Picture 1 (tube, rainbow, N blue to C red):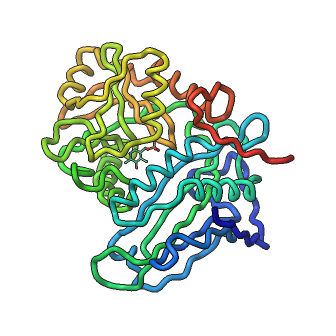
Picture 2: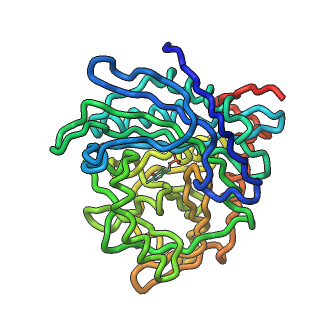
Picture 3: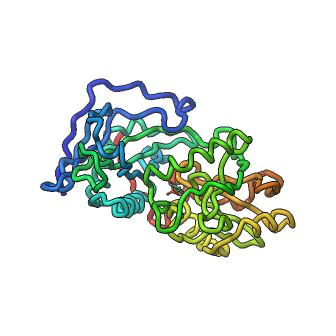
Length: 358
Ligand SMILES: *Cc1c(COP(=O)(O)O)cnc(C)c1O
């Protein structure tokens, strides 16, 4: 594996107080950088002071969107060490995203070693207050200076770190969601199953309109029939009906969430029936009306579990579990965050521990 060179920052920033973190607004002192060209492949893995990047206006990523990203978290464990959650799975998904948009794949073990080194160096930035974490954002973008649609010949990979506050600082807050019956997020055969910036640009207008109407999130339906549940905002969706948990299968337009996978594995270990099968919005609304819809929640790295309090579709709406957090949602949140902070057993080997001294 390549040697990771380190250039330490001479201007250390003030680390914000844990109650003033927000999400994605503060960045640590360092970042990981790596370059790609045709002659050398991925090379020159290094840690540098966090700061601006120079590029020409013709840089391809800006024009044609050839770029991908990941989002994962590290946590301060009770013993002072850093717990990195399912990093290999995130980097493997990073490579799946890379393949789909013709970006050359990275060496997962090399990048993991680089990330661990970055975390050691910016250790002081991993917050320790309840519910806080260090959000990790790896991304790759096309850097050829060229106008014309083709895969770039050069790329830059970066990992930046952002300490984030407790998502539920005031306790769990069930969200009001609106079923989007006009716009779609992704189509099968498209790029919905990878983390690439265009998907998020495509989702903005629907999200803005839903917010204007007083809703927190959009529930996306499939693009072919506008009938089947796909995702909620930038999370995977699960419903509990008749004591069974149902989540849409990974059909090609749904992002394969790591939290979705963690949730399914935990439910199986608890012997709670969980089905990956298509479920229609009509069935969900019907179950909401006749009391069979017990719980509904989104899953994703940022919020972990995000309970849905009410759902609105065309002229119809349904309140779920009286608008309060369901028992299973709470239990799953406690279990996953417990594993992340190291207070519950990591029986699935999801944690990489980074030992830090004093
Ligand atoms: C990232 C993301 C998710 C959740 O994935 P996690 O790995 O659980 O964070 C779900 N849907 C979309 C569209 C996403 O971008």
